[in-house]
Every structure is written in C-alpha cells, then in structure tokens.
Image (cartoon, rainbow, N blue to C red):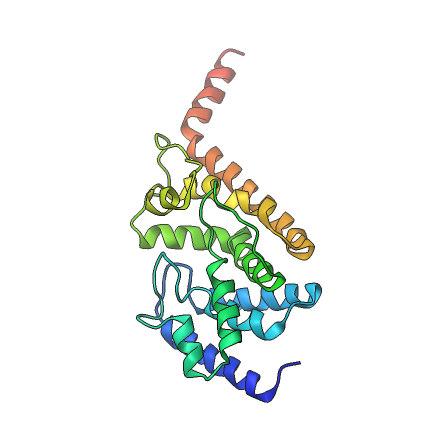
Length: 228
C-alpha cells in the first residue's frame, strides 16, 4: 500500500511522462509506458516486489534510454529530486532503470534485484506479440529503415557497442532481439505471458515470408500442375 505522499509522486510522474512523450512515434510513447507500468505492477504483486520502486522505475524507464530522449533534457534522477524523493529511493530507481534496456545478443546480465527483474520483464513483454510487431515497424519507420532486405542477414551482436551502432532492416530486429526475449525473462509470470506472444510473432514471420516468396512459390505450383 502506497502512502498518500507516494501516490502524489506517482500522479505527478505520470503527468510528467505523458506531457513529455506527446507526439512520440517510435513505439516508446505514453501508451508503451502505461502498458509497461501495468505489466510491472502485475509481476510485482506476483513476486512481492516493492511497488513504489517498481512504479517509479516503470514510468521513468525510457527517460534516459540511449536510443532517444523522449522527455528532452530532463532525466529520471533530476525529476525525482524535484519531487523531494529521498536519496536512497532515487539511487534504487536510477539503478533499476539502468538495467532495463536490451544491449544485444551477447550482453544479457541478470538484474540484481527483484524490482529490476520485474521492470525489465515488463518492458520486454511489451516488445512481444501483436503490440511488439507494431512497435518494431513504428520504430523502423521512424529511423527510415527498410521493412526487409533478403541480402542483409541478422547479426548476433557480441556486445552493446555493436548492437547500438549496427543499422539493419526491421525483419532482422526480430532475430537479433525480439525472438530472443522469451528465454531471457526472469519471472515465471512473465514467462507464462510471453509464450502466446512469442508464438504470435513466429506465426507472423511465417506468413510474412510466405507472402514475400509468393511469386516464386506460385510459379512452382503452376509448373507442377503443368506436368500432370
């Protein structure tokens, strides 16, 4: 149960993030943050994590993301200080946020607290399934990336620097990140939710490649019929 002061801090943080992410079109908008917070709360209750830390970290997890800065020049630590959050809580929230972001196939360390595991799992769940697919193409489009180029193969980045600097098409993103997430979740509740979402993405890719190769497959079927 949160205190009234904590509830007020959460309400102000929601307003701060909503206003700062207005017009955001990469798939990291307010509604992504909203979904991550709801997923994080669900997981936190299952795992007995500290709700105040989880909510603050979930709400602020994209403020300092390396890919962009949706809020502008503000940062999570500065915002929490402006709310007069105590120093220990600020340190914990900032530390949780630092562990959330995906850093490549070769870089996946275990978060060091249940709160960090919960928030990371929640963020990764929102990168899966139907919403994950929509977000992948929204982000790719915002970065002027092609949907698919069959001549450019996926790369399993060995470290964060390689992942951060490599530019590819959106379909590769499924193989370089999204399809890897299911097996990198930490809580049993998150893993359970991930199963259906992961299967949906696999089915999408199956259909995508069937449609991509339609002309070749169609020609083969016509040739097969002509032999009969």
